[in-house]
Length: 457
Image 1: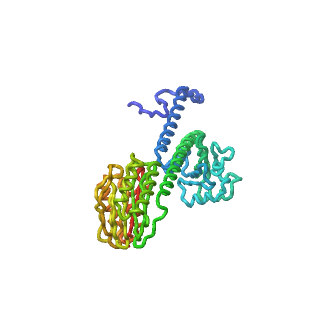
Image 2: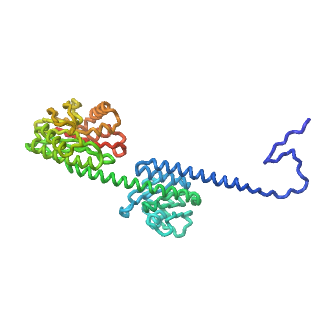
Image 3: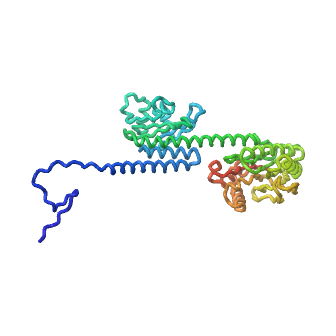
């Protein structure tokens, strides 16, 4: 009978006889230089691949909030932390942080951290540009630091973090725009390689954030200019309540509205849209609105004449531009509305017994024909009914075909709760929320949105 097979252990062949002499101590055989270089190269390739993926994800963010969140999460992954805090202080702001964002920290936690004196934290020293903070500040053992601020020690104990690594958000082109700090539950610090990678990532992130900050400032300036071109307040006219909602696209557009008191206790309502976008369209809409005001005061009781004069002015002064417009002459006491439209979307009447579009005459936009003219339409809103005037941006932002967008608008108006139908602001807000449930400011559409609601008592 043959001897049983013995297992091989740790690369030793049991069938090979072992020497009876005492074996010399085993020495590690050094790896071949080529294998060492290959390992180093593989590590570098892996690090660069990770950095590329993270920067690609950051580049895909289109808003400042999304970019800040991505930066916090990516930085935490690079330095091996679970929680973090970011403070954004672009140049030109006051000492109060303009943006504070936390990762794994609640609003209450952020409040506790902000009670610590700024100079007592690594984040504060980095934000203020203290000497030695340009490459980041590491605090590997907060509770082992005898010079730790007592309040900082109290907050760290309450929140359960024992170490931190703070890094400035700075680059040569953008300067210092803020700082981030990542928190560790146990004493520790990122390795040299981790600090190097997160430093590279932070410099790229700073450039991206600086571009988004400038974009946000430009959008805010555009929105401010657009609002200044519109009525600062709506008039108070007996028998009718008014409300307006206006949102400007990222580049600024040419949608506008107006409401002005006219002789004999009448009221003029107007909405319009100038073709194109940007500062040129915004300026044109301001000129158009001012001109319509003048014509409405002189001959507002005849909406066709008002739009005819407006079309002539546009054709003579800006022959390359087109616009849509709708003007309504209202007599609230008599509940009488006479309106004319030039290529504009029809108003919608909402009440207890009806929700329907006003049938207006088909007509071309202003500037499209050698001579514009279309008959006016007269209707009588019942007591308690609301007339909605709007621009086609409300329909286009839905992304639906126009017939489906009109059906969606009708459904949105019909679903206004009865308790809110007496309030034109509530009606406008409900229509906006229903038509654009994802919000207006987060939309990537270039379309403006205007709603002007008139509720007749």
